[in-house]
Length: 73
Image (cartoon, rainbow, N blue to C red; front, side, top):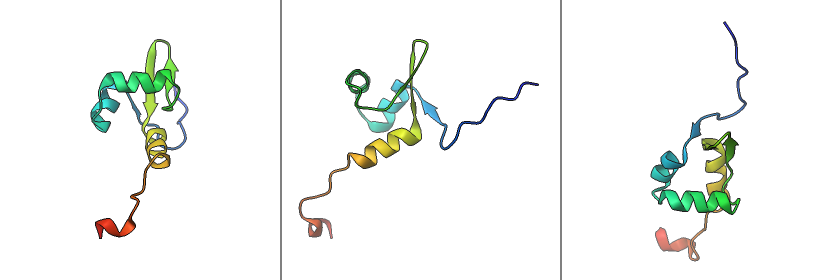
């Protein structure tokens, strides 16, 4: 039996369609972000894949805080 190496960290990969559903955006929006090299992605042959941990870090880095922190208290 062949043993494959284990990828470090969160190695859960999602497709562009799955990511679009998770983020509740269109699949065209996902492909535009990939074309601009804004969203971290991996290309494997003719497929585009996203590591879920990378996307979560990208979202956290691009989070906007409210202008008035007391607004939602």
